[in-house]
Amino acid sequence: MAQNEEAAVLIPIQEKAGLGTSALDDFTPLVQSHQQRIYRVLLGMVRDPDAAETLTQECFLKAYQKRASFRGAASAGVWLLKIAVNLARDHRRSRLREFWHRLSSSFEHVAELEQRLPDPHASQERVLLGREAVATVWSAVEKLSPQQRAIFILRFVEEMSLEEIAEVTSLKVGTVKTHLFRAVRAIRQRLKGGGVRE
Amino acid sequence: MSKHLSEDQITEWLLGASDDFVSRHLEMCDACSAEAERLRNTISCFRDSIHATAQRDHIFWTNQQLAMGQRASARGWYSLRWAWVAAMAMVLIAALFLTRAPNPPQNTATEDADNALLQEVQGDLAREVPKALAPAVLIAEERNEILMNQVARPNEATLKKRRQMK
Image (cartoon, rainbow over all chains, first blue to last red; front, side, top):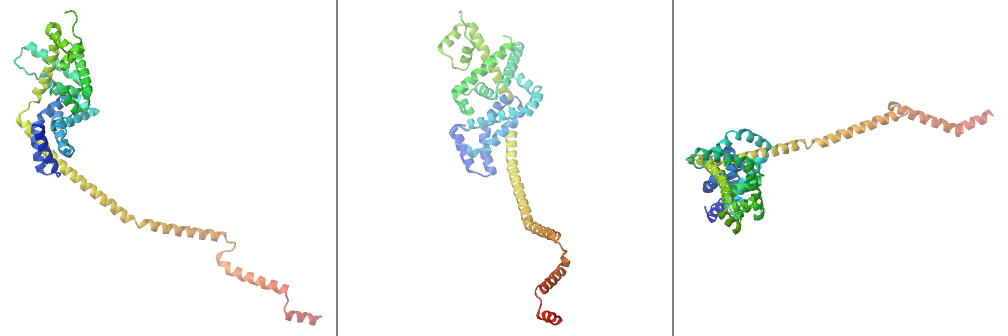
């Protein structure tokens, strides 16, 4: 959905101040066009499909409730990503959640994520190497600060420009670049230290 | 090629911020090119694993939309319910204040009466003579006063008697 079209969708929704179902129905196209991306970013941030699913719902609910605050200066996509990144940050901050996350996700979800490789027809050795590398990147991404993780995911998973990332994270482009540089360096060190074979 | 690219130069290349020197070097140096490609492929694998996991069927997304709708409606009712609870609490508090408002003056009046009684008791205790004997004391005082006057100033009859005796 183009930026103008999104604004055209959101502004009439804002005008319907009540919690009527029509306002909710009007919001649905926005959800449909962005939910996959939001889910993907949250998945990368929290590394847990169940939590990402819940947070995706939370993100759109927050957006729906705060629709009056949408000024239209940025695209609705950037606005939604901003909410998603903040939600993921808050989710990770909770120590209790962190504990449960480690306990649960370290067994099923992480394994599931690491097993997923794009090319199922690749050779056995290549698949194993790929899995090992992906696992190493995941563990390196886990060690990054929430902000660096968000920036890394937005750049390399969503392939967003530095300017767009700066808009989402409310940082300067130079700061985004510095964070990204540090994140990549940390991952490279991890890849070297993790013994990913060449 | 004697000097290879530094890690930072390869990172810059990955971020798309490298200069012509790095690009030319990568074209000519197999080792650096392999290193850069390996890093790019690893990150690509990571990206693809997330994309593959996030690739859910139509039912998943539809269920999500339904769940969002339900939660949005539930939150509406939830906030409405809390508004009711808040309103009821306010009414209850107001009712409590209204029913308890006359009590403080009553308490003050009782306190005043208690103080007056205490003062009265203290006054009684401070008396030399009990309150019941106060009239008798007055009579005795008047009598004494009359007697004193008679001794000090004798009347005409007394004086006449004294003269006859002489």
